[in-house]
Length: 612
Ligand SMILES: Nc1ncnc2c1ncn2[C@@H]1O[C@H](COP(=O)(O)OP(=O)(O)OP(=O)(O)O)[C@@H](O)[C@H]1O
Image: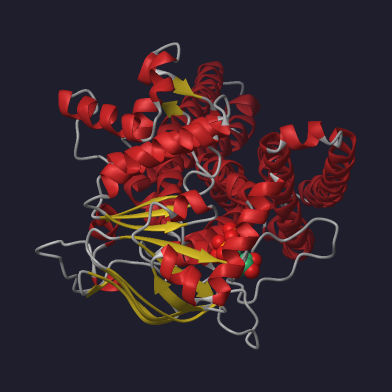
């Protein structure tokens, strides 16, 4: 059941936000929050009951006034007047206390619900495949995580309960009006009808605006995130002004939508303020007429005015609560679009395990096309057959864009093959638990990503089996840093406990690459997959890393994407990727002798190096 399809970031001023394909009614859309709200339900119900108690107390005051005016005030019974005064005071204090209690009841559970939705959302983001993250802007995900889930929390803490209480208060108030005289009740109900009709129509039009503004807020977050992330490029190219212009355009689009929202809400508020006043005016005239004709007592007329005052806030708040309801529905839709996105790469139903790991990696007639590739496009990988023998180092050489990096994403199932199979020690990788697979195969990417954490934490990321403070962890860390020639880490202000900045920006490209390499070495997998791991290193450091890697690679199977002759030289054999297939496999010397494409590729690599 989906509220709508996972709409990849919709946009701002490029046209109207598309209506989700399958819209649920608002109550059903909000009911999807139930699993998160269930643990907090007793307290939420408690809060609603106490809130209702406060509303009842406020409605009882007019009844006491009616009794006082028709009884002791008319008869002059002072004792009874004192009792009536005390009752009104008592009801007022009880109402205030119950409002206070209502807040106490709901605040903590609502914050708990927010936490559990955020946790589930983050967990979902972790489990969703790379293909999902390729399609979604990070700002869209961020705004859903922060802004939309915050809106849901505020709704559960205040909006929902207030809406229920206020509607109940209005119903009880109307019933009391009927009790005094059917004509009063009827006038009130008839005059209120426009309020409900306008509320319904408002939901339709405001829903679209609400969706657009929340999507635009996501786009804006993306713009901020991208410009902060790419601040060096923007500065280097002097494009700060251009970025500001683009940002301003997006911010203005959001402002325009917010203003349209505010105008819609303002119009609704106006009618929600005006109609109750008109209704009460009509009731007033009716009440005076009824009293003049002896059909209503003076006490009842007096109580009616008090009731009008008590109903004023519940009626006028409906406009605000409606818009809040629609915003929350939109926020819920946006959050559930992520929950509804399919997790396509999962553990198998009946996982196998590799009893005696040897480290043989085989590509058997592997085919692959990216999900967004056109149906008419040929597969990027169109029948890859390649076997890496245990302990062998295999380099992959191919033209730019031929699919080398893509090939490295398949063994760990960052993407699943669209045909054929990747096998580890004879077992299809799709038959292994993801945790086992990713423990056995380690990957270092060309773009080295470091997290905002210490060098130690970054390097030992894949070793959750080790206590980070244990001597064993220290030994693994030292050895990995040694292999990756990352001795510079010891000279950082706090050594290996130095926090490397956001994504390691405070380190040089080569330093980051060496730490990323150390991370995969520390993981000690059976098979290493390295996507051009030395591209950012200077010639001397590269030679040192190579020498150390050779020692590690001596008994580890490795698949290395090579863009340089020096990387090729580390390999036992080289595979030539050409037009989606492995055209030839052999030693560097054999291929130079026998394969024209290989000669061409090596020549173009050399030419690039010479130019560099
Ligand atoms: N996530 C993705 N979604 C869609 N298409 C992609 C994705 N990643 C890469 N591609 C496309 O797949 C093709 C192969 O890309 P890939 O990065 O695997 O090539 P490569 O051989 O590693 O290139 P290079 O040598 O330049 O690093 C390219 O045309 C690229 O545009």
